[in-house]
Image (tube, rainbow, N blue to C red; front, top):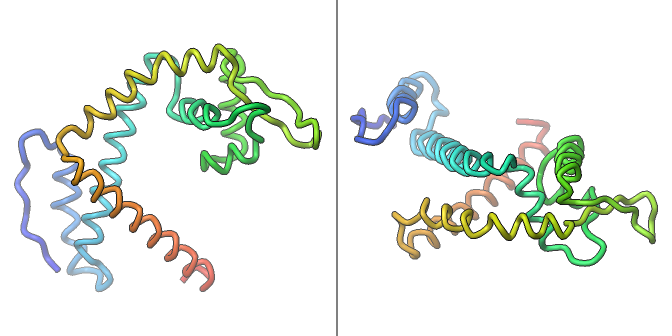
Length: 186
């Protein structure tokens, strides 16, 4: 399925133009090529990059990576003893080494502390310190304001519809990955 060549829109950049126009040559070369799917993938990846870069730039003003911010956000939902390190890794979807590095950094800043689980000494718990809670509370208003600003061009109905479609895509992709895994990678 060939798609007409798109002209660059004001405000678009060369990457958008390149990927959405230049990838079309694959449609004649590969039978499996499906333009609507490729276009969706490009738009998702590019949108993720734009949003990630914007949020990371703002967090950098506080010497905080997006990963470290996510650790603070996850830990803010745990009361009492804290969160087991392995569970934190599952919730963040990053490697154990990355979680350890993020926790080390946040511990040096006195935002988190590690303790042993009294019931199972093999389990390491992580929790926010008072300083970590105070820091997070100080940056959240500006963060939520930026998030709101990023999506102000969309109606609440559009946001809800897009969220629903993204969940549907995520579930479809997860199912597809399971099928591929069960079929030996094919």
